[in-house]
Image (cartoon, rainbow, N blue to C red; front, side, top):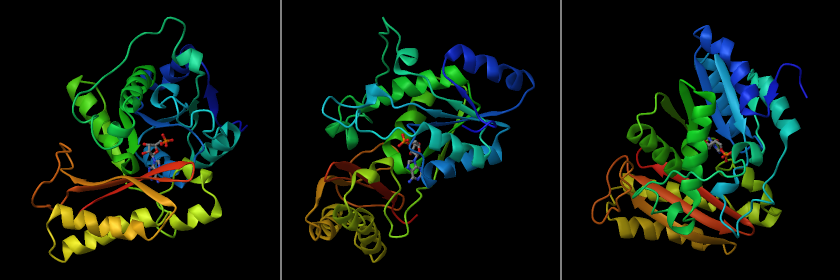
Length: 286
Ligand code: AMP
């Protein structure tokens, strides 16, 4: 492991290491991740190091945001490689607690949210966002950042976190960073490594569907059902890709667009390809 990066394993260690920075009035940025870092994560860390004095990247595969039949055990864990990536990016603090440190014996508190968490990914993964909000609130309390950085890749996640910050008057700012893609348009994801070569070759269909919808909308099509059919037709050409949802919604409230699609609306897709459940999104006209 690199000498430049300090990995904290307990809340006490983390707090002790951040105390002098905080006392000196340095701004603290937090980048929450589940590790297996790629260029998407790196873009968040780079944004954080460019705008904050001290940056903490958390690496924690949070059991509470995985459903019972999901990929918790298979999820890649690559801490040594991740630390090397973070050293190169100039991030000096890694916060990597064990599950027991995060949720000790007797742990019994959960964060829940109505509405925004019931649709899109929340419909297929009913306990997911409660798990995300719970761990993110804990991370905020452990690190006490001035700014926390999230990716638009997980659009609904960034929205529910912004809502929690607003609803609970949390004293920090949330910054949402753009989606980083592979050269063929596939959104970078730690789960892409589950794909076989044949499945990987069909993965660009998600972004292609979003692009086709955006193009049709720019061409004057405003009917949500027709736009969504255009996206479904693109994905239907790829037999290994099975759509979970492909929807157009208001980007702030996530209300379904019944009649007329507008600039800035969210087009969000989730699909199963082999062992991977992949998501992608685009804001129309962005
Ligand atoms: P994860 O490790 O998948 O929980 O992601 C940690 C953070 O990185 C989340 O805020 C994600 O939205 C963000 N992220 C993941 N993939 C990308 C990507 N391709 N582009 C930008 N941000 C991403």
